[in-house]
Image (cartoon, rainbow, N blue to C red; front, top):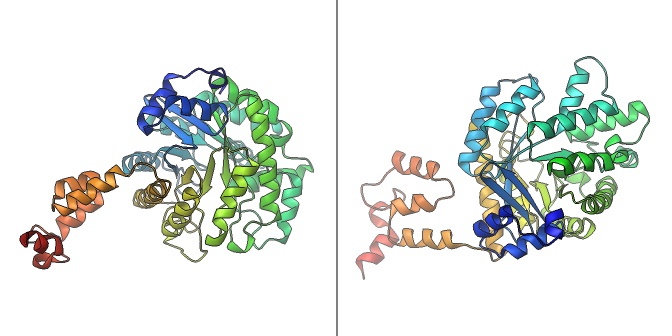
Length: 410
């Protein structure tokens, strides 16, 4: 951000401009204004924000019930193959530092974390709460290990926690719950908020992007866009301004469960209050009863949100609310959210060249090209192999394929 404000177009900005088919000066200006953030890992550069393609993130990580690091590495690789732009390690079980190191090494895309998880898990194992020093040591460790972005729930304050008492579901964010417990037990304000300037110093040193977590996101349609959520959003807006003044790029995280008719208002409120900072949304999930199919519920909300200006969509898997996802669950979640992101980009009048090529391939009954332009070709190829047709058409229509018949009439 500091270089962008000075008018310097960096090599990363040039690569993003080339990949996104936009002007490099537009990217530089967006970074300088805080409307675009750049995540860079090895030869992978990911731009998130205004005027760029909608990006998606896939969560991986162990739990206390399932702590096999090899399983999580498989999920990372499967998510990347399916098209995720970033991954986040949300591990809470096993040797957390070892797991994070392996995920960073294994991932071909930028990696994010929630450092307070490791601070709280370490302390919980000793039967105590972490100190403020413990929290910031965890953040320092993650930054030194080479993460590209960190979620910090710095915008949740004591008043916001108090406001959740009127909710059906008080706090559903794991990091938010941990910090709320810390504030209540210690009778103090959120240390990530009171020490935010120090947090900015840590992030600036390694050019790490801060993602302002939505600790008070609604976990029920009943609680959507309530006073607690709005209190945190207003604080996010304050922290965005402070981060930009310190030349630290920030993302703002947004609501979870939101009725379809409120999604647009949520996006516009965030963009207005948070100075146009990139908006990262969990879904949103537009119904509470899609258990086992929450990847569909979230893709519906994600498509609406991105079409209205959200920049970064968090993958929700079919096992959300029920269990730790499998590799297959992660793939299904990534593909569903890729579809949502792409559909939104078409609505925003961005490049839809692949859709045109797909239509041409279908018109020609060219299966090789259809698979080439499919958003996830593995599934399409498997269906074709499993239920192939005797004719060149698919087995749904077979000899009565409309495209085939119309070709014969030419």
